[in-house]
Picture 1 (cartoon, one colour):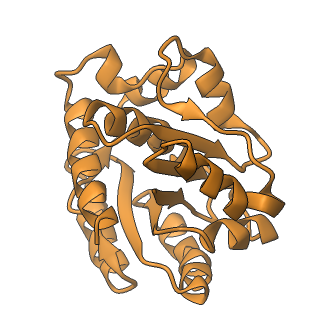
Picture 2 (picture 1 turned 180 degrees about the horizontal axis):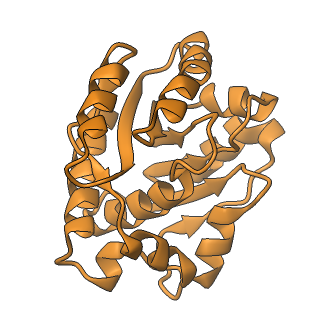
Length: 206
């Protein structure tokens, strides 16, 4: 089983949205069974999952103190991928989650404030000795800062070759437990999510 962790010390960067979307896309690409795990006290991922009609991906409630043990149980049950959403703060929870990660995905919005906030997340991931990939999320079409953000992030590590743009369908999909690919599989948003998943899947195999 592989474990993908979404982490960022900055709130509002789209961790929960990406966790749900990548989980659904992984199932669609036969990379499941997928288990979603929500370690954020706000519980946004679990709230989204509770609204879902579809039976996949699974949702796993875990005790952070026994996270490694819970993951072993999920693997024994046949789960192939665990996707863990994390709280937007430097906490002991983050360190415990990073300890079990195979890959850490760090969503970042292309703004100076967000880019300045990346350092603390990078420090935590490096302390844990884990591989990380940045993904530029919520970008404005044709905005110069999007490219500048990718260049700035590349100084810290690998940047996913897929940018996710700001569109209302991402927000709308999270209201009723669906994803953009379930609402309109032919949309540009759905295409971006599929490309991002394909890249993340390749990274997880390394």
